[in-house]
Image 1 (cartoon, helix red, strand yellow):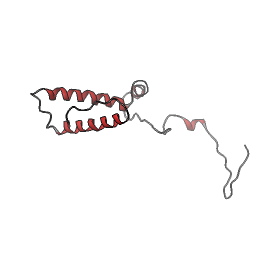
Image 2 (image 1 turned 120 degrees about the vertical axis):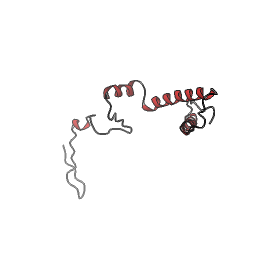
Image 3 (image 1 turned 90 degrees about the horizontal axis):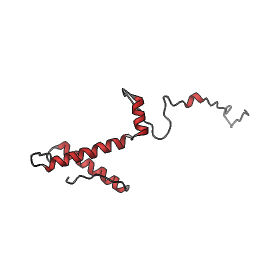
Image 4 (image 1 turned 90 degrees about the vertical axis):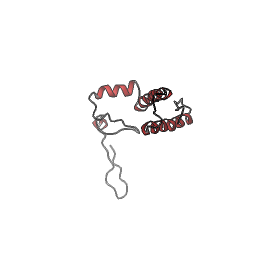
Length: 113
């Protein structure tokens, strides 16, 4: 390999070792997902790559929870409208729906705020 020297510098030589690019440990790319303390990291990795990412999983759970909340609110014997957690959840779902719709995506919007 030829030696190339810039002014006031030493030799500019770099060895590239394939083991440096090992996918175990370290971060490569714009988005890196760490499985963390999973009891089954291989299952979690496969779910993320083959089924759905965290955003889609959380979105579907939130949509289902909104459907349950609205079903219970429709019944006269449940007073969920005053619950602070339910109010905060519905505000969150309203904000998420606004962002999704802005991007042309289908969204579940609360019927009442």
